[in-house]
Length: 253
Image (tube, rainbow, N blue to C red; front, side):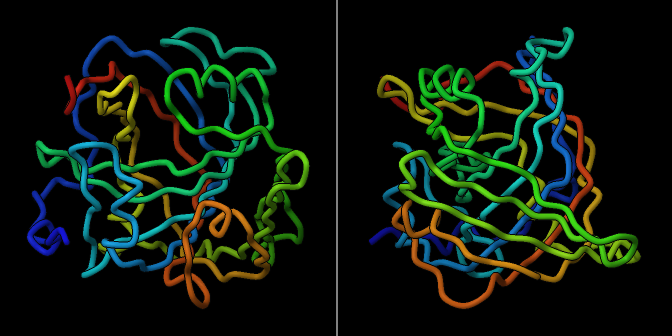
């Protein structure tokens, strides 16, 4: 069994700030009304999801699995104009936390549910595990009682999820754990036998602690991930604008 404990250690003082992005910029995206739900998991239980050369990252003594929902707004290639219709949709993803052979921290997507078939087909061709689903945001209430959530049903009803939170917008979530689970500036993926790291950059997430008000999820179980009890971390962000840079090979032929 792999020993993961050595990767849970002191961070660079600027670990939560986005690094410089290698040029060219390949994509620009807006991420709005993001809901972050996280559970602790044993690193050994998620090792099989990691691409070759990549290991589960350890944060606060364990690895983590996240169920994340947000609205993609105005995505476009490069720094050009947003792609009409196809550039805006709802996405819900299941993700894990990774560390590459060079020490770079990132995320590994287990599944990404999205409501645009063309986006799903294009992304799957690039090795990103998108799933075509009926996805929609859920908002209700006003002022301090406003709730944000997401509803997803996979076609042929293979799995579904519905969750919502009530953010405390009068408070800021700036503790190390909240930052570590959200300040991730790239993803590890596998394509044609090679492990890639795709970097991104954005300003720090404006984060708020939130209360879980609704939860009925089947996406984690469908991905083969088992969690117990309510999420250990519940966060909300109004969103950020992000850019993606050129992928680089970190392992493989």
